[in-house]
Image 1 (spheres, rainbow, N blue to C red):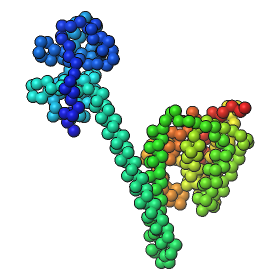
Image 2 (image 1 turned 135 degrees about the horizontal axis):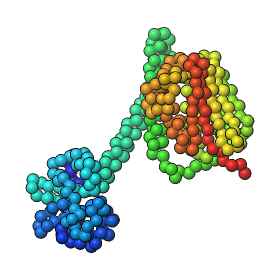
Image 3 (image 1 turned 60 degrees about the vertical axis):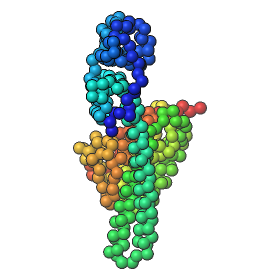
Image 4 (image 1 turned 90 degrees about the vertical axis):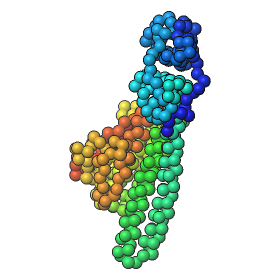
Length: 342
């Protein structure tokens, strides 16, 4: 896209031999003036110029910025503005000055384009999720009705692929919500005991399929932290699902909640699974981490779960860390400040 549609043909001008004081207030408010000597435009004047050259006359303060032309692209001109610290540039068509282009107009254009692209992406992800959900439901129905072993196996692979795709799409949608999180969003006291009970109950089905035992121990039932229930639940579910995924059949997971000097709560999720190799441990909280591994029964990973978990934990002034020994298991430790009791 060229800059033609962003060119302002009506812009403020000032005589090169005018005194600075008559436009100082306008410059402080972000105005940019085209400086002319008789009928010829010879440069630009902005607040940055009078700050760098505090002289009395306009001609002594003006900066010589590179001219741009109507056929140049938006990206090219914006980069020029960045390089020369320019809030505006003069625009020419051949040898004639036809107007001025402002950095704030290009910035607004880029911001709108990004928002529009994000909205399009979100719509596509929602649509794909619906299609995959339908395919997953159909394969599940057909699998139950299908008696031929080979066909049933193929359908089970298709169902697994649908499940992995849906999981990734759900993570992407949640990540989009997270990255647009409003700091002013209302936060409520959240009962940690109730939250953890719900999370353990949610993952019980997948744990039972692997004959994994989940034990939950809390030394107190009325601990509260300040946050959003849905987000905190997502964080702990990610940790628990991770533990189930990387724990062997007939393994064990222990969830404990305890207080630290009655000021912080520490939630521990410990498993006796396959652990994390030392060279992977520092990268498991990275976005789209490349240390993705399959679970003990071949379960897929999206590479987003632990990144999302850390973002949520830190959003509510908490911290998360992991301790692990390869082939012996892992323990994830999450710490939040406690709300004072009445």
